[in-house]
Image 1: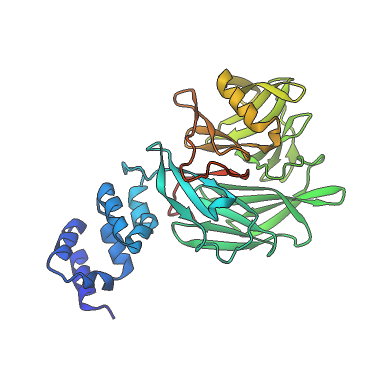
Image 2: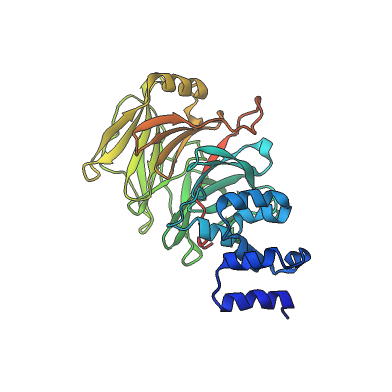
Length: 388
């Protein structure tokens, strides 16, 4: 049964009074202890209507208000397409020294936030996860100990546990992509001299098995496929090429277009999710990159068109970071940015398509000056309504 205070609140809702008038009524006449007796969902709803600056000041007054920064009512209001709010998109940095706390870089404000996203409470049932990837506001973790995956929406506090399609095989090239109708998980399993592919469709919540691709996609099992025109595209190791896995038919194909250069030292693919495919590659000889270029697939998907070259000084820095171990290099798309990262370096090199310019993301201030490798970046675009 609702108490007297809750009845008063609900009467305001029924009379269609504005939430800020409710807040004003609550603030002065009532004893402060009343606030602690309000149902959490009502309190969250009321506070979600505060201006962002006021709310950020308010949340420092207690732990309860601090946690509301990622509450569903607040996120749903401030992340709506029409909301003019810095709560739009983030880059998350993962490192073993952070112990499942992810520092957040706010791409709209261009600064590091003074709070982090914690996974400790959300993934207590996954204490030994080995892989973490993200897409469309969802996270996907793999845990080889329990032979299962966990797909979760941190904002909605919802999750789904998915068992591996086989308990006897080693999972490789885990790819997780979201679509307007759900999400797809792709994994490649090695078996003796061959391999097989499994695809999980969230709409039917089942795995399908398909023939694998030979030769295998390489020793860099962290490499993910990128979604483009209904297929997952992968770059193979030397001799470099691009192969495609058709999600509908389960067939592997080699696109007819050739790579843009015969002197590539590494190849990475990036998709914007809206019909464009990009290729990031080093150009040089003897395994050493002298330049790094960006191409876009053009001509109705028939050939690569050069977009930009990385300026010389930035290229020298990036090559020195990699030490020519390009297997540590990975790329991803984030809200109009093509991000180029390295597991051994705590910074992101990114290309901003709208301005056609290259930039370095500033180093995370909470990161120790001396720290080991193991840096992993993720794109995080909050989506309260992304279903698991």
